[in-house]
Image (cartoon, rainbow, N blue to C red; front, side):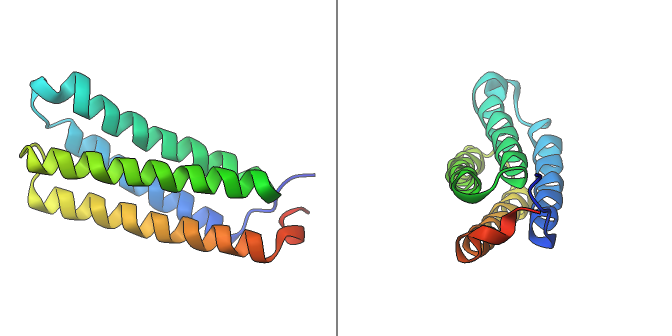
Length: 126
């Protein structure tokens, strides 16, 4: 049996793909001094979120909830890293606002997805 894909799951995945594309375009312009530290962390954490969303998409029950929780934790770590990049002037105001908005929107989507799984645990399987 395969986990059923809902509109929430597709929307969250598509949203994060947009955000991660924006992150990669913007981190490309960071100074070389931050390339091996902050840029690597931001990009790797972004990819970790993507991995966790995909794992959640194909999981069910408690495993799905756990992946969504881990994705939210990674989003929080990412928000801190993005805030640091902004405070170091590697990321301008518009970039900071756009990425932060994407992180918050994705976090809200994942939270709604988690709540729907917890409210309907038996409906996650075809």
